[in-house]
Amino acid sequence: MKTVQVALFSQRDLDLPTKPKEFIKFFQEKFDLVPEQYRDTTRIALEAEMAYGDPALELTIWYDRPETSKECKEREAKECHRIASIEARERRELALLQAKYSNP
Image 1 (cartoon, rainbow, N blue to C red):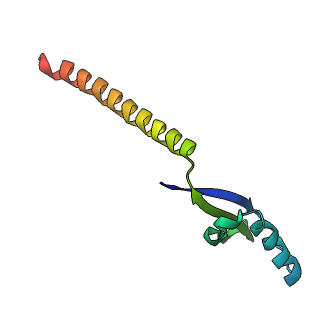
Image 2 (tube, rainbow, N blue to C red):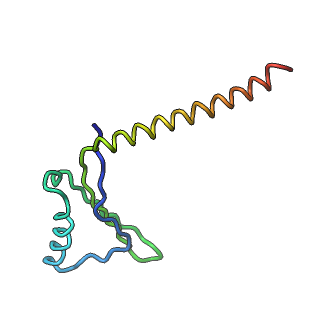
Image 3 (cartoon, rainbow, N blue to C red):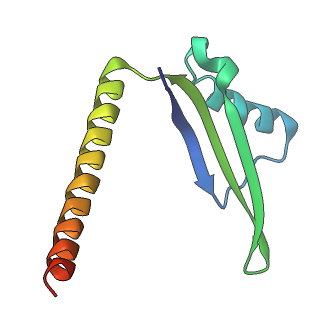
């Protein structure tokens, strides 16, 4: 079974708290949203880049959990549809090429 990434928080141009207690509280509040059994899978990505001469922060927090059976069925159905669409397109292209090159 595959895993699913669940995004808890994603924000650009973030102003993080500068006082240690507020900083810890900010992250603890996000972490508390993660179900207990998935807390070990929690990840944080903090990216900084310059935007118009000013630093901009982007913070993303997520955790991984097993895919549900419903999600698995939906994913498999989408994959079957995707494969069928590709095959149909390829068959149309093949028919066009055969028509084009079989009768000079």
